[in-house]
Image: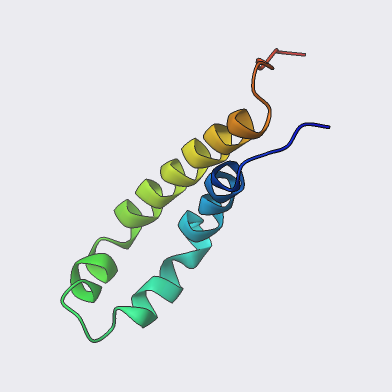
Length: 74
């Protein structure tokens, strides 16, 4: 068993914050700031960007936890 760094686990935990389901939570937290208006106005774009970020961070975190193992098609 290899010892993993806390950075590898943090990198794998970042997708939890960027999941598109968190967008309503972000809107509630940012309700009193100037960011809530543009986010609610362009909700679909914000959800798409957060979704793409989620997938990218998920893949990046999986590669960080499993170095040297490539992705192979079944």
